[in-house]
Every structure is written in structure tokens, then in C-alpha cells.
Length: 274
Image: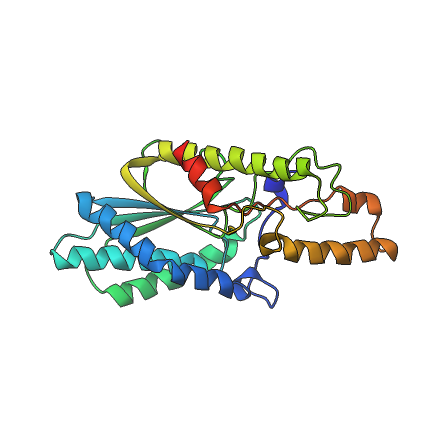
């Protein structure tokens, strides 16, 4: 089954939902807030557009979804008030894979909008929300239609499990015991996906548009280092024990691999420069 059909965070607002287990992701969004604020401020102050189209790619569900959007709108509103400029209208696109819990997002939308109006007071422009289900490893929006693209903790997920991983037996990801062709397959899949992502966004962004992308990476040049692979090695050990106990079939374990890649800064830079 294709990744786009099955990959999504746990929906709802229960104990095991993503909404109640995404504090690390929220911390990362807070850490990168100065970069995001600087980017949206420079975007707005360069042309003072009458409307701003914002896309959050890999929005998931829960408080983090609206946290990013509210911060962006607050920054723009603060900048326009300083020069007594009329508020722009906002178009917000929330994107994730089709299995994402969009229902929970839109059930809480009116509460978010009312809270935002209370915080910013009169004069704030209308804000329109649209859900956009689909993979960001392809075109999602019209040409020259976006002003600002944000994505956090999503781009480490690949569009598919790399091809040619039959020799990665006993592992579910890159590991110290993985043969070189497995590491090569993962890297080539990342190259293909990330370059396609950049190409699609370059067509969708307006001239002078901005992007802030945050995703898991690694410091070392070794893609199989414990820095990025240790958690998957531990899970593989547990799954191998379950095979020995007869809980799962060895064939199923050997056919399962995680569709994720955590690139180094040099690998990201290389794709951007290409």
C-alpha cells in the first residue's frame, strides 16, 4: 500500500492522539519563531500586499496547526499597524495527507477565529481557511498563488519506501548492519523527493515569496549513525524478538521499512543549489 494512503498522525483529542503528544514539535516551532517572524515581516514590508496566501504543509491536527498561523497573522498585523496600513485579507491553506484528521481541525476553527479577533481587535482583515489533502511531493496550488510557505517536522518523511531494500533483512531502517546499497537507496529517494518539493513550490510561490522549512536532520555525514537511527534500531530489536516468539511473521518484518530520511546540512544545501 502506498505511503500517501496510510501515513498520518493519530487523530482526535484522546490520550494517544497527536494533538496531546506533540509537545516536542511545538517546542521546535517556538525555537524557529524568530526566523519565521523575520521572513513574514520582510515579505509583507517589501510590497504591502492587499492579500496574503499562506500554506502550512504537513499541518497535522491539534494546537500546533493554529499556533503557527496565529503567530504569522499577529506579526503581519503588528507591522501594518505601525504604518497605519489597512489589514490585508488572509487565505490560509492547511495541507496534509488524505488520512489526516481534518475534521478535528475544522471543528475548532470558529473558536480559533473568535480568539484571534479578540486578541487583535477591530481592523483585522478576514481570514479564510481551506483544507488541502494531498502529498506535497507534487503540485498542490495554482501557479504564483502563494506568498508564504511553512512546514515543520514533515519533510523528513519520504514519498515512498525506497526501492531495492530486500537485503536490509532484520532492520526496518538504515542501521549499522545495513549494506551500502540500502544507504544509497535512502539518499537517492531523499534527493528525488526534496528536489521535486522545491520545484513544485517554486512554481506556486509568487515572485519574492518566502519559505521556512524545519525538519529532522543529522550533524554527522554517516546516515546510519545512532544520532538519527538509534530509535529505529531499538524498535527493530523488539520486532525481531516478536518474530522469535511467533507474534509476527519474519517475512512481514523483512518487507517493512520506515519511509524517512534525516539529511545532513551538506545534503540539503546540495539539493537547494542544484
